[in-house]
Length: 351
Length: 283
Image (cartoon, rainbow over all chains, first blue to last red; front, top):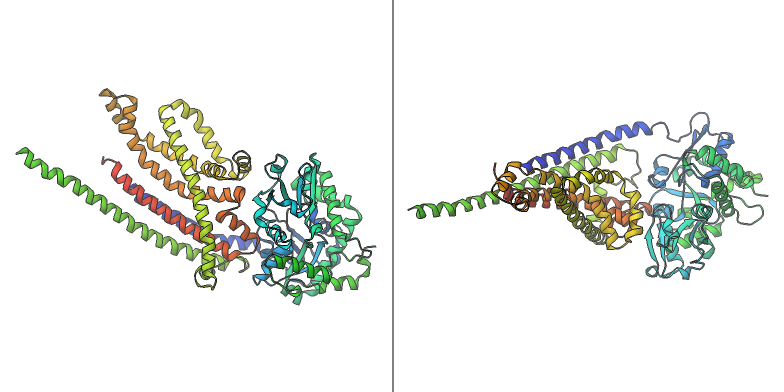
């Protein structure tokens, strides 16, 4: 008797779920309306951008561009910075259906393109990818070979890059024990893991400010030439909204130039305004911003920031090919718009 | 006289009971199948409609057809199935650790609480409150203590399984009719024999009810352990899929996992039905 009752309950519950699934979309689509990203009569509409992570200093250039009105200068009615984070939907998915541009990583955008998603990388903030292997000062990893026999923690969002790194350097994956560590690498400070795949402009700074002696090995410095913080958009935007895309990139370049010139202001904006809810530590945020600026600069005079050279693009393609992504430069990159922006505005180049 | 009259009825009685029991099981199986088919149709319909209505890229939101293609008709379908099956085997193994440890703990604690009302009064509020703490936040601490191997996986799984199982089991052992216990005591039986003869037979059917609930919770526990501790199995694979744009595999894994859960749940339900019809006396 009781079993019959339970089954009925099971069915009822199933139906309730079904009902929710049916009602959900209506509510969701009601929430999503009003942000189609298409150009309205008065200019380009809203510059909507899906950020790769929470609103920390990694996106300071966009905060400055918004605060200083660079988006509106470029013809947008305003900007919409959509925060990411551990539970956010995939960036590529948002760019394909909601936002104008997104900030992603080369291997992830590459995976999406390999699956047939009509996306392109149109620029990159960091000339060197910020990922590094962080270790404790008394048990350091300074060369890729020293990874052998070590237990390395890695967040699931960094794992594609990490696997790609191991493959690109020809390391033996079976000799490195990669374990999932979502969130803070506190386990490293007590010896539960030997290292952590983190970012030089994030966890490294945080742990150092907590007083830990942290050693870093930047993946880009040991033969993994990825660019970081890549801007991605759809092929359709490149084909049909080219001027809008160039206007967006123009505003971003101006914002990032300001971050390079005045990191203190960028850090303050992050802490007090855009990332206010995150309760960021002002000193750490400033240090993160400085570390990020080091990744933007490639050391050459008259650097055209956010742009990517042909050689760099080819090196990126080669690096992800080792991870199993067989794409050509033209499959993944469209650097026409960003180069046109720099050509048309020579004053945007760094001094 | 009395012997010849009595013996046939004594033989017929158990036989009829056996036939009844077999019928119950057949009925239960048939109903299970019908429920399964109905549930699948309902889920497929809701899923298809949902995908049609929401504004999510088809590269991310996969339809039942995409999953069917990925698992059955694609040229690489056999390879796809092999990857998912081997990861599923790992997840089910991980789940079995949490399942066994969780139910074992719950059974032990429920018996402890049966014998000591004080212990129950002391610990029940904190046990239930413990269940309200999200596992995601304490799992990293459990990992630090118990490691990333079998023990860590079992503990994370058990931590999720134990509370609902315990509450179900307690309800069973408490449902023991007071009058039956009183009768055993009145005829000179000890507390222990009252427990063996009355309370335990009443408790055992609910142990199977708890086991049925624990099927799904233990799989959730295994996935959590794989997300946060080992990186193996379907849990680890699904998390990587989301980051590597392997959405067809992700959706397919969810479907395989759901179907597996339903099948195991129904199997345990059938066992439970058999045990209940055997153990619960007609009243």
